[in-house]
Image (cartoon, rainbow, N blue to C red; front, side):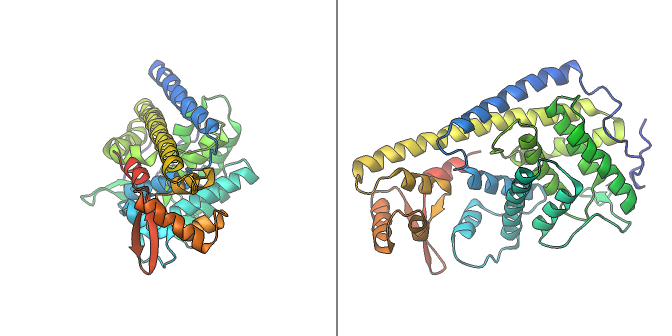
Amino acid sequence: MNKFNREKPYNELPLLPPKADIETKKILNKTIGAGRALAQLNGTLLNLPNPTLFLDTIYLQEAKSSSAVENIITTNDEIYQSVVADRKVENAATKEVLSYKEALWFGLKQLNKRPFITTNLCVSIVQCIKQNRASIRNTPGTTLSNTKGEVIYTPPSGESIIRGKLANWEKFINEDERIDPLIKMALMHYQFEAIHPFVDGNGRTGRILLLLYLKLSGLLDTPAIYLSDYIIKNKTNYYKCLRGVTENNDWENYILYMLDMIEATSINGLERLNKITTAMKKTADAIKKKLPKIYSKDLIEILFRLPYTKRQHLIDENIGNVKTVGNYLIALEENNFLKSVKVGKEKLYLNEKLLNILEEK
């Protein structure tokens, strides 16, 4: 039985792997379904003409949902306009979402350079999210409370203890190959959140690590998936399952939750991807028919990379000079392919079809 007292630092947090049975019949059956759904998504992404085309959009959606888990709320319009427009971002929530997206990209680049998940990588990610020099917690007094202000968890305390737990976590991720990678993903996520190594940003860092692990383990070559959307919709159960492990050693329900998340998110991601690629093809065919002089594969990709675009994007991709691309955008708006929106002194062009697909629940 865990030596757990919610009011005291959980320095007795057991190391990985757990002693409990983490490969029950229910878990193994669910692993098959989750793995199949993830493989289908992976195959579809790999077969896209440009597998990286939608990544910025997907990572912004993941950043928005992951931040919303922490009650940092902003809108799709605010996010996408802020990414495209040449203006200073004033909205604090939007700044945090954009920092999260940059942290995710940073993590993926680091993983390409060195395919390991490490404590140092976690520190760099949280610094990117929080835009500060945060490091491992070294002062006591950190507690997690519910909405009533009641303490529900006190994570391990003391920098040396936290670093020791992270060293075991790191070794488990990078060296232990006996456990199915999807089950391992669930274990590493719980452990990171239970260690709670930072003063702030643990939840968001932990959710970025999920995506990095999917890539590291070879389960998703291009981690174009936003898991946080599932957590938002099932937030109460997420925290209940995490607490179930801590308080009752109930690994089964927690692992099943995480596998459900992978399966449901993969299926939804595949459906959304198919809707976007279908809309992209229909738009391409319609532009080719109505505006044949304007049509090019590069132009279509620009219009579907993010919901908003602008003249400079077309110039950067060598679609034409200032005057030419200006005329192209006017023609696209006149034929209802785009809708112009004034943001500050700048004119952006919205692809409503793409935004509508992204906003579908």
